[in-house]
Image 1 (cartoon, helix red, strand yellow):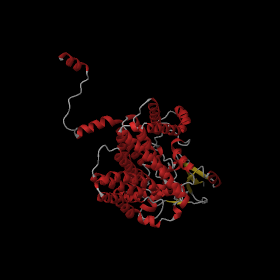
Image 2: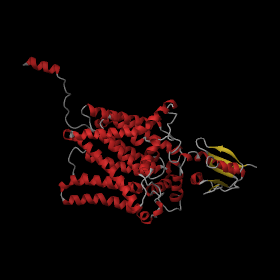
Image 3: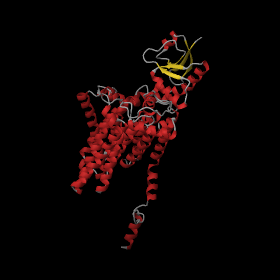
Image 4: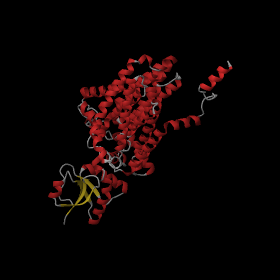
Length: 526
């Protein structure tokens, strides 16, 4: 008996002594840092990078129009216009009033949205995904995708809208993955938080409305199902928490704008679902979005560009295969994996419902489908759905192969995103990257020659007048020339490609060229 005990003791791995009580907060923090340090470093660099871009990149025409039309006194911040993203406008006015006008204060609300968005993505990844490589790849897809990162910097409402929508997606995930029964008080608090996020996201950008509404509805239905056990009054309190905060925020911030919004403002979009899809993938995979050659060897970039167009189709195929494999063994899945699969299915359903809602809106009310920046919510919903799906553990060779290929593909796409890192231009407004550098040159030339007016085209005019306000230049004006460029002027700031014949016919001399675009400053020769 004794010898058998000794033998068992020597041959059986021994567990560490049991600890009494739950881990302390410090121990949980240390454990979290050890597990997620790659994700934390990636998030920290993303924060640094969006602040760096906000400081060094030229203001764009849409940003400049936001400032000149809705922010700069005595303009009316409540103007009913599709360019007026009201939450962003109000926060810019507050930021500029507190800190004075600068790139950083002007883009401060967008950066705030970027911080919230990055934090929500980080929490989503650490909550849903147990595999370090997959969580890192999904984080890159959420944050480092070039089109998404552009709008975390630009002074528009998209960063705030993405941030609060991502907060709602995280809350949805937290509800579906909850391991224990939640109290009525906590459920009501989460519903209130989701409603506040929905109201703020809506006021940040109206184009996110259907996605916001459907995510909020999904949260409400899940919470309602959990809260029924607490009685009728609990359900009444839940309904109030779901509706009142969002309604109050929308009414007080955007009520007058919605009441007075003219129909002719709804002009940005498309009539075709295929074009909507194409515009979503173009900034990530199209020819005109090239790698940053400071990061990617040009010799390596060429073959990579040749295969990148197949990535999304391959990912779609792997997703479909993995869904079928998991559904076949639904009954034997662990409870946690079932919850992840439910989360993925819910997000896919929200995505399809959002597409259907926009399609019906087009057919019934003739409102165009979202396009490019007004359809960014599709990227968030699909990325979250794919993340939740592939976080389910594989069982069996076929599942392991499918899931492994998907994780490898997502990781490769993450490295592609890193290869696109840039701090010189926004993809949508690429041709305006040199306006900030050209502004002091144009002012100096005008002062030296005694010119009071610089003629420019609408692509640059609003930006130049923004910099007039920023640098307090009162003795030189920039005049937009709509349609045909006015002749007989002394100095022009224009795009050489668009006005090559005009420059030749007016016998103008180019005295400055933009370092990255075709922007030129041309003066009349004596």
